[in-house]
Image (tube, rainbow, N blue to C red; front, side, top):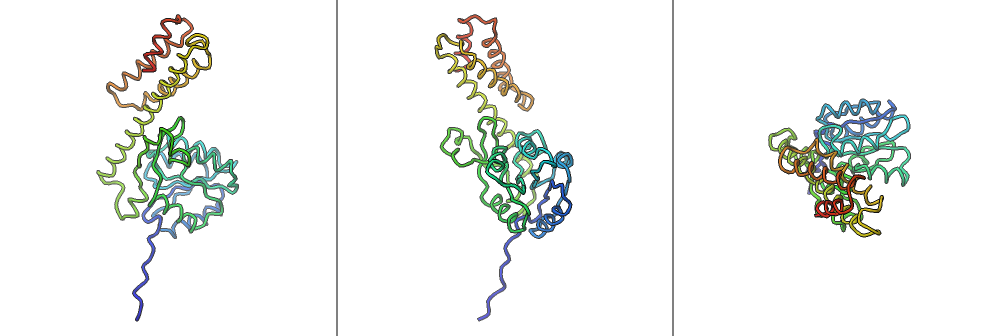
Length: 285
């Protein structure tokens, strides 16, 4: 008997707005064609990272492809700034770094910055489709570990931070299901996820502060005598203070401010040993 009509595979980027940072016009033209083949609604091409940053600031991007080359600028830095909410409006934005030189060091640096994937150039439609499908259908949960924000990597699953993993909003999956990313429900989900990410960052910093204070209390030969431990406390406190501007007003914000003040007093050269030790014990708790 005759077979029924062959069912077409859903296109990986159906309805998505893709932002591409690529210095070479010829490479950009080929990549844009490949992305449109996979159903991209719009492909925004920017020749420089400054252009990429401006487009991210405008919002509405569902996937970022940014080239890593000496002439393009700091693509690794762009990835980190996106994840830390310093660039764009979506810290969970699916993000791929493209490069002609996909060696181990480059891949490690890109992934350490929170990128979802690294694509070897020239970009092919099949490669983009494969990676986009992976993000849409089985994107890894996000976590916060030290100065890292992004998908859980191999080896992180058994760390204590894996308990703080969560599934971020996935615009590619939403679009692939034929739904809008601009509904009140989708916007509320994004805002809730952003607030949860802030809470995780604060929790992560608090754990570091507590750990540093407990280590500093270990006699070596006396509490708070080791300059390395004192520096660790100050570093953790500085990272915590850097989060104050993104924390919502309330009791948690005031508590973090007070904690920072206590650390400043405990690690001050003017603090005597007894007082510094007592304050550090409070900080550790």
